[in-house]
Amino acid sequence: MSILSFDDEIEERGYDVRARRDAGGGTGPLYIVCSPRKSVGKTLLARLIAEFYFAHDRPIAAFDLADEGPQLSDFLPDVTTAVELGSMRGQMGFFDRLIGEKHAAKVVDVSHRMFRDFFVIANKIGILEEASRRGIEPIILFLIDPDEKSAGAYSILQRWFAEISLLPVRNQIVSNGIPYWGSFPNESPIHVALEVPLLSASVKNLIAQTSFSFARFQRTQSIGLPVRLDDELRGFIRRVFRQFCEMEQRRMCGDVRGHWSSSP
Image (cartoon, rainbow, N blue to C red; front, side, top):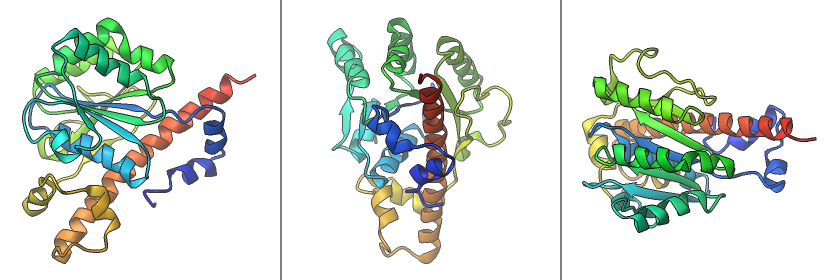
């Protein structure tokens, strides 16, 4: 399946996506990438989501709540805004932007140090519920790991944001051995299995360069890599983007069903 085919895939199932957009739909989702633990792949996942939208020539805005490098703003400086939650003014500016522009997708990279503060504030002011009321679908992408504190944090998010999609993401470098059904159940309507595959050390060193772009690499015939590494990286991108495509299909089909069910 081509990574550019998800509109066609949805329409083949009988949903007129373009007509829905013309009728006022087509709002961009709000992805919140998070974990209470460090070094689990949050920034990599946020990069991949943004580059997925680049590959589709669709608008994306990124927000960086990290406090250690390399940060999302180092890789995607043109679309990333650094966020300061330490002041009321910073909070208001940030949350206003999250629920303001409806048609661009948004991705928020929440550092492990900001995890508690971000979700406490979000729960207190109801920002995710407000986004939903405005037609912006929040999707919390939680990087899972074996630490019991992560399972506890995941459970809290399930209780606090019961009406919001909460999806566990398995970065295979840290999540091996965690049962697929257990401490991190996916009970949201978007029921997809998201995984970040393993990469060799050589490919990890390449993508760690702040000048590297997944979307640009995917569109380029060759950058001079050995065939084995070229195939590995292209396979990685295809696999991850295919998962995002499925997530987007399920999200949009759900929106269409909701739009139809509410029509007179």
